[in-house]
Image 1: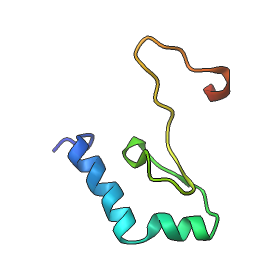
Image 2: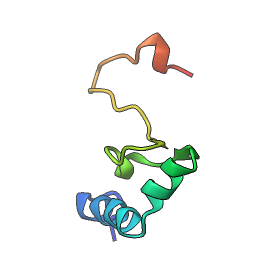
Image 3: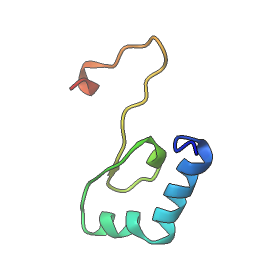
Length: 63
């Protein structure tokens, strides 16, 4: 099974929303580090920065 497929990512985010994980963490002001599957979740969910192929990250996004 490909865990990086769009269907899998959508399922993870949908499950988090159905179980009020995003809403509860936002209410408690708890930041969550998540993978790219949670992009667009909102609240206090922090996801990796996406960059375009052959593009450089800005200084702000470099570790």
